[in-house]
Amino acid sequence: MLKDCTSLDDYIVRHQVDGVLWKAEKLLAGLDNPIHRNEAIEKMAHTLALIPKLAVRDDYAKKIGKLYDISFPTFQKYINDHLVIHSRKEKVKAKAEVKKNKVRKLEGDPEKWPFFYPKLKTNRDGDEILTGIEIDKFKYIQLLISFGFVRY
Image (tube, rainbow, N blue to C red; front, side, top):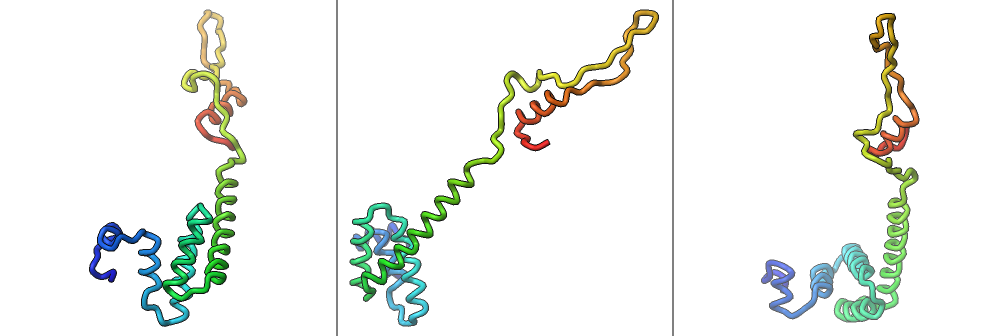
């Protein structure tokens, strides 16, 4: 039944079946090996766990269970296991988005932020001679922070 279609859209148009049932057919149709069947059921449970509404998810689980001889409580257990995995992944993502070192912003234009000053010495003739450069470490660190560096 799938071999006559080139894509999911083509299959849906020809057979008026939605994507979840198409995937179930693609994964579960004609599987005799119990190991491969269990892996396919796991993949289908993963797909159903992504559906946010419980009623829709249960309807799909019941329909797929009837079509491919999967007991509903067993299939529901697989789905619940994948829901737990997804919730843990979401918690990890939420924690990863919180940065330990928040980048502080420099007030003003960083290009005009002077962090060094010339050391000038006046000689007897009144001329100024450059003897070195003085660096203000605090202003230099603020400039680096404004560019996104967070450690010194």
